[in-house]
Image (cartoon, rainbow, N blue to C red):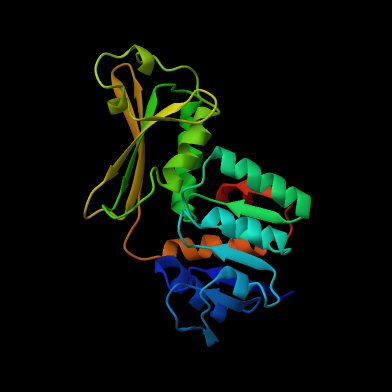
Length: 257
């Protein structure tokens, strides 16, 4: 079976590498490419809007665009009968609930991952396992000074995973601390929420670390991204091949591994 793929953000850092990988595969074909910049991707003329791309027959839309566009893109693609792979960060719990409802209503699958790297996926799995035994944990999210959204999708997903399994922390509740409460970071997750701190500085690409504290010892689990988009391509292609068999929203690449 050949899967016809639309890539939104086709000229971006990850999108351009993904287009090349799709063109080189035996079971995937690039049906359309979307980007604000005009050009050609794998022999196909790039169009400026997803609506134009959806006029071409396709099966899966992959979104690597911008946090302000990804939700509208996803809902549009679902309404047009496409499955969706979300590689863009910036969506919150309420957004994901709306997307899940839309996907189930249309009988289509959506797979969203904060990070499609295999090693970043392992970070989330290892940290969630550690949180079952060590309740005191906080997350630091690092990215470049120009990244507009906080936290990164990787850190957001990590916080949600940890909050669902950990116990109550021993630290003073944020409501009771003395001084500016914002310095304690943001609470992430709907269970035992985790404090998350986002740094935006030059020289960083993407990194995230979960720091666990226990009496007289600490454990740090960290992932650092390099300067190439290559680590994300294999995971995205896996998601494209699997999402056509899903209905509703699935979070995290580890659900496919």
